[in-house]
Amino acid sequence: MTEYQTLTFEQSGPVTRIVLNRPDAANGMNATMTAELADAARRCDNAATKVVVLTGAGRFFSAGGDLKDFADAADRSRHIKGVADDLHRAVSTFARMNAVVITAVNGTAAGAGFSLAVTGDLVLAAESASFTMAYTRVGLSPDGAASYYLPRLIGITKTKELMLTNRTLSAQEAATWGLVTEVVADDQLAARADQLAEQLAQTAGGSNGGVKNLLLSTFANGLEEQMEAEGRLIARLADSADGREGVDAFLAKRRPAFG
Image (tube, rainbow, N blue to C red):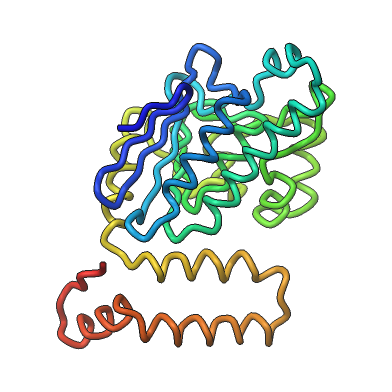
């Protein structure tokens, strides 16, 4: 266990668990939390970590930016830019690491909390969870990669609806829209996240990272460019230790033992 002021960070073999831990402030993101989240993400970006589970303490996943923290800043603009920069560094690292990121949304995800929740490679949501952008309600604009992920997940029209009307989605509505992988009973969320993490901990980290990288590039590339990326990656993975083990295990009809 590593001590942070606003997070708990626990490594257990190939699985790392990060908990947003400001329950008395609805897990609001202040300068300390986003700096610590960026550092925690950096520490997960290694060959030994195959799964990251990210969740919140208490009733909220995160209510988004801590507006009191913003209002108290001497230079509000510079302060908020710094908070956003640290959050974005965390999101970028989570997106580009080989580890599969599971976000376990235990309650309300608002503003940057919503943005962070849907950056998970797999998104689990408790039945009581809810999702709302809420930025324009306080005269602000989206951050946390919301303007990148939401159009890709649900299209421009629905993204505009969420961002401009601040509509609140239930967990089941979010799943129907394609924002959530699976909805779980509240009292089963942690167990389901652990079960999924243990399952993914047995898989090949390089292969999972390859999937993530290919999907990050798919909307920027043309057909031939994307196929070339696929061809180069599968060839490289085929010659890796995990690739050789996976093929050998399949041919021998046994379970692979990935590194």
